[in-house]
Image (cartoon, rainbow, N blue to C red; front, side):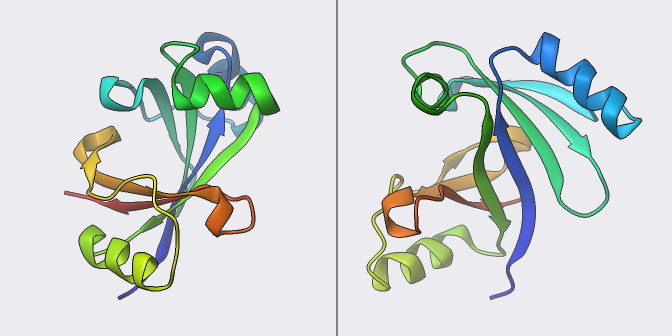
Length: 133
């Protein structure tokens, strides 16, 4: 199974403040914005070549990104790997002893199927598997 870096997720307190700063630094605006209620976030994606940058704003302070911001502040939240089969990626990670956040895939930004591996399994890094439609 081929793994490619799909995107880097960056937790921000406000898309309205962060997106213009990133747009100015990169010389381009976001490719789009989207609400992902199932994950409790609003996202802005920047297409910067291969992997994308995904800015994540929490919809509530109680959600995963809100809790991340409270404990760690703004910054890199996760790394996402694009996979052909998210179920196979989950099975491989579980078979290797990884602790899973998601036992089954769920819908993410752009209609992708996504699943997360707990950061305690991978040296403090939250990993997302992404299967694009």
